[in-house]
Length: 114
Ligand code: SF4
View 1 (cartoon, rainbow, N blue to C red):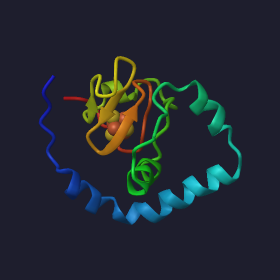
View 2: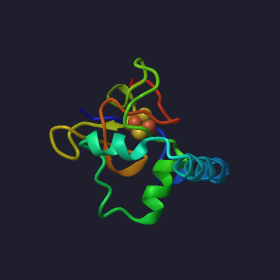
View 3: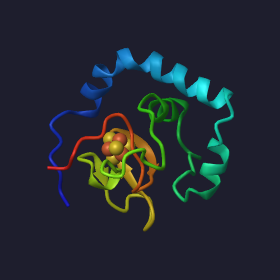
View 4: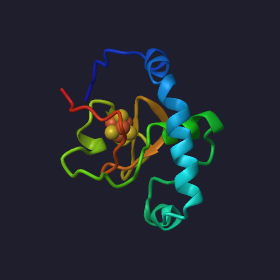
C-alpha cells in the first residue's frame, strides 16, 4: 500500500518540539510509577527496541506510543502513518519514528488513513 504523507519527518519533529519535554516528563513519570509496562512489553512481540538510538526511543515516548490502544477505533493499523509488515509478520512500523509497532498500538499522532 502506498501512502502519500503530507508532512516530512523533519517538519513533524519541528512541530512537536514543544510537546517533547512534556511527553518525556510523562514517560519518566510513568516509568517511575511502576505502571506494569514491563509486563506489557514481555507479551508484546513488537517490543524489541534493541538497535534504536536514545533519540529514537525518546520520540516513541514523546508521542506516548503504547502497544495496546486505549480506543479500539484508533489503532496503528488504521492510521495514516502505519507501515504494514515492516518488522516481520506481527509488527509494522510508523513513518514518524523508528522501530517495531504493534498493529493494535496507538500514539497521540494517530490520524485516520486516507
Ligand atoms: S498511531 Fe502513532 S505510532 Fe501508530 S502508526 Fe499512527 S502515528 Fe504511528
